[in-house]
Image (cartoon, rainbow, N blue to C red; front, side):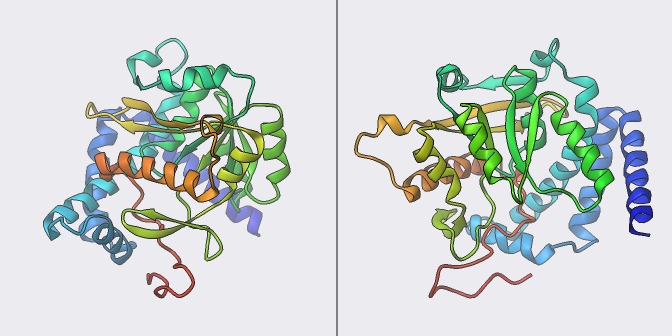
Length: 304
């Protein structure tokens, strides 16, 4: 029975994607605004959590300014889905310059061609699904960690999109050995680095508030002598399907003779991500619980 329900859900999603692909991107943008209004003012999905997150991150904003951010965040999330449906048909190796502006790519050129592994860090910021796709188009296949979906049909379909241009997936559970193999081969390993790691994570400052972050990125960088680069793809003002692919920072362990700690590396890339989010706050996922836990002896957990 579960397989029948999973397949019906899969068919429904495929039908919605086909409808989306039949619409022009401009029409999709119009619909995204209508859905954003509905989710901001009528349907209270994670309403309290979103507003708590924005109040913590931007305490000086007025209530009206934060409500505008809520609306624009929902608009961004719906646009993200629409773009994912259109990108494989619109953007490819021969026309990517019409859609993607590369920013600060000189920072990464040498690191990509060194005989060393490279760790790429991004977050739930901009269109991170498109970012992995773009790396493949640009000729830099990457490996990234993703949780398998419970629906096997949807999982296979999404995997096809992610791997279409050379982004290979490693399962979040039981995938650690594969991550080590990627680094040992001196390939490009990508991580989403803004997820809560629980009470035992590395506690760093994020928008002036303690945030638990996974230690693995920093540990792997130190263990494999791998530079860490922060990258994200944000939507440009020219809607839709136009992006800035930005290399926001690069940290090479070899350039720090005194050595780096796990917390220093983790805080470094967290601040880099925060700087980007402050410039485009509407393109961040304020719907997830980034401040999910607190250090031992701190406050209680965030409420829903």
